Length: 134
Image (cartoon, rainbow, N blue to C red; front, side, top):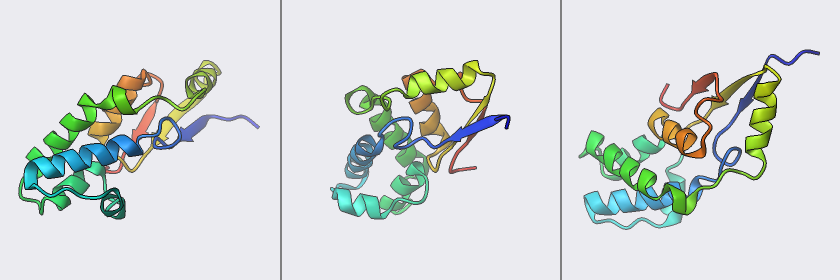
C-alpha cells in the first residue's frame, strides 16, 4: 500500500496550545471588557475558532479589534507557553523526506495557525492547510 498523504491535527498533536489559548483569551477579554473569565468558562466556549470566541466573549462589540488583541497576546507570549510535542519535528521531517504530502486540519483560525507553524519552524512542511475559518 502506497501512502500519498498524511493529515495531522494541530492542538495536542504538533504542540500543546491550550494553556496559551486560555491565557490569551483571558487577557484579551479582560483588556476589552474588564471581565476576568475562568478557565472553565473559556473552555465551554470552544468549538468556533479562537478569533470567533474572543469576539463572542466581548459581545461582538469590537470584532476585528478583539481578534487583533487576542492574537497580540497569543503571539507575544508564545515562547513562554508553547513547545512542540517531543519528536514531532523528526516525524514530520521523516514523512516529508519520503515524498509524502503533509496536510494540517485544525479548528483554529488561519491567522493563529500560521503563527504557530511559523514559530515552531513547521511552516514549509505542510502542503495543505485547512483551518476552522474555512
